[in-house]
Image 1 (cartoon, rainbow, N blue to C red):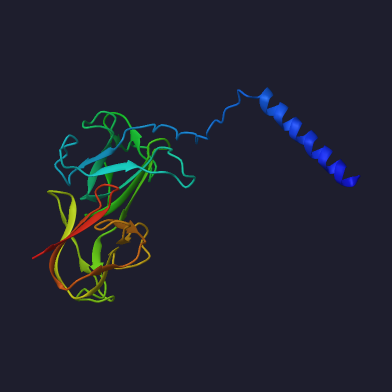
Image 2 (tube, one colour):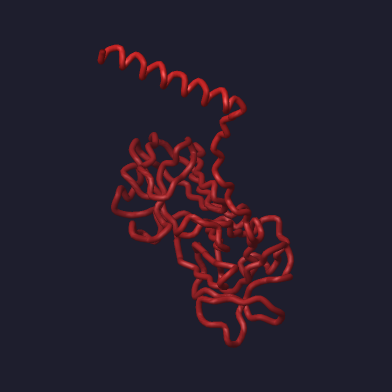
Length: 240
């Protein structure tokens, strides 16, 4: 009897499923599509015009800041980039002075504003900087990141950096150096604890990634060219 009961129960379940599927023959599977990211609110880039480049916001070769996500992974008006600064500059949202960010008489330190007749933003010394700003809360900062090359393949091994030199003609960092078989990295200010100042091997040949591993190199004399002027960080080793 128990065996027959199981057969009957199975048959009833099959009938229920068949009816259910027939009643819903028009069902269709809708694939999940992630919600698209909110569009960028603001310009695609900001231009750094100042005494380091002749006060020309329309220059073809000019340091730029690019949109970055905040700590919550959102686009919220944050921009950042590596640029060379001399002393004074403004942050421009386009290739003119219209809407440029500077400081007024009452602008607090670390803040900026928009308007006519503003004074310039300033840094205390010439150098290569990691510049950040937020166009919504009108804040900005600039941290010195003068880069060098270090590693077992360099003359200074892991103890002493060989400085990279900024080339204003193409916004890149360069040095000619003789290397041995070994490894290299690029770091800022002769230290490992500088925020945004440690670059190693990226996922692709010739690419750099922040905080990544060492770059293996072969012996030889090279001109090394490091490009941090866009978020597609890269390096090139040109045999001499």
